[in-house]
Length: 109
Image (cartoon, rainbow, N blue to C red; front, top):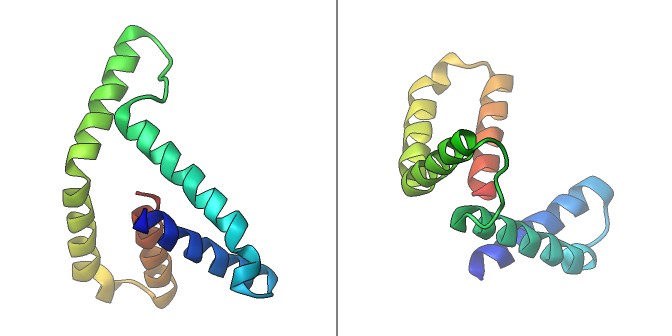
């Protein structure tokens, strides 16, 4: 529940940056979007999103889903470590893009 509320505030603030106005004007729609995201993520993690393809393709995708869900914290730790080790070699523009991409991945999780 807390993650949904935090995400809703983030979405509302993004609306303010993009379109102007006040955060509270965007919050109702942002909350709907955050719940939609949370339900999609939960459905994907429990496997209730129907995978399509051949039997072999579906099994392969389910195996990947299981491994990713079990190891997502490790993946983020490796990303963070790699970013810290290599950030001195990146230009300012690439550094900002990499930070934003990692942040977006974490938000989507």
